[in-house]
Image 1 (tube, chains in turn yellow, brown):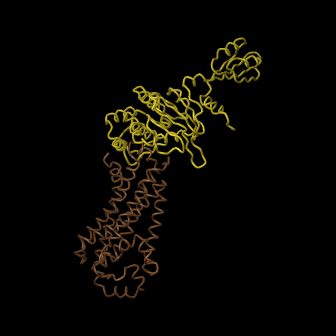
Image 2 (cartoon, helix red, strand yellow; image 1 turned 180 degrees about the vertical axis):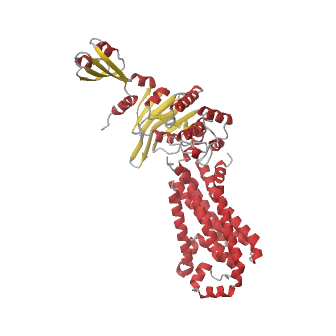
Image 3 (cartoon, chains in turn red, yellow; image 1 turned 60 degrees about the horizontal axis):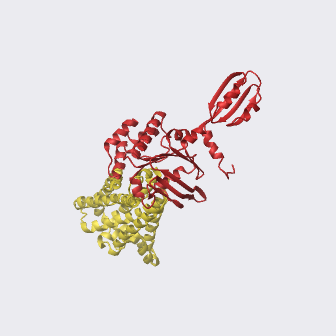
Length: 302
Length: 268
């Protein structure tokens, strides 16, 4: 194993009949980082994760965690990993305490103090029956069972999808704390905003292929703005078209709408040459940026 | 890890197991309490039985079974239908649910996220599905042993134990078949359906085997129901080749079940 990589997928491929869910995926997650795994539903995120945990077997290629083969050394992989399933299901007849006790015993025992501490932070009543819980509460049980043994690797499939913003923040804190004590976190999401906020690096998955891996700083750089400027005089759109970073200019009467990537300064300076009545600037939804990556994938017919 | 999966399994199911065990014992108790009445009106019943076509009598009572004797009565009432049917239903339900239910409920992801081998989960779940069958057999034995003598139903308790063990093993065989199919497909319905269907088929084959002489040899070899011994079992005792087959069969099925389960992609 390379000391630098905690998770490695090599030409990982998974076919379901004629449908190729993962297509020769090569992926490296560095030890000690929070790696975001971005993709829309059906892109193959869960398939990758379930291969890492040996719940499903690749049709081709291999996956390894901490240098251990995900299939051959599966038990050791799972001992050192915490996993939160994307579609979390719990034993509805058990209380949270019973369920966590059961999973803890299967791990050879976990610290009751750690479980209590996590439950307090997540504001979860452990005596409640899982079947009587809301989605959010169940998700908290899932989060606790993934973190309770302080694993070296955390594999979290859409951990915050069903949590309210306050709880999302707490889970993000837990993830960062895990990273800070040296753990590697592999977290999938379809929410680019969350990934940008949380991760060190992110991979974008599309139709079973890794489109790109980027430092999350790059994502922010790609942030775009739509600036709508209302002038007191007619302005020719051509004044804005050649400015750096401007991709789209629309003009109606006295109003010019410009889409800009990166630096806004040239647009503002240009606008200042005319008499400005009103100006609105809005950041383009990060999802738009995300969709850009999707669109720019070569060889895509759509 | 000390059979945590098995313990969890039995803890979760103990109410159902208790209901089955007590229920089976109560039904057996009713039959036992009826014995004096039936015995007293013996001549009439014997005449009725004598009027039945011999083939039918042989098929459903077993040839040469004296219905009015304690062994004949218990054998007919307990061993030809009641005990096998109860235990088969119970075993097939438990066997089909053992692995596949966790998959259908989606809880298998959490269970197998822990460092436990799949084959261990399968083995503990298999044991969990079978334990209650032996419990029911023990309950039936206890009722006959405790209440029988007071109603004039005294049988050899050793033979009774072996005969009940054979019935339990019959149920174990079909339970393990359900376990295998459900574990290999992730479908409780398919496991229960295949095992239930084959159980009915094997039963029918056993009946026809005693009706149609050209079928007898084949049916006796193939149908596990014959291995158990049928209504005459308390008089004649279990034949040991049958008993061996009843032990080997579930062990082989378990081995195949684990192999298939280990290789599978588990449903998300």
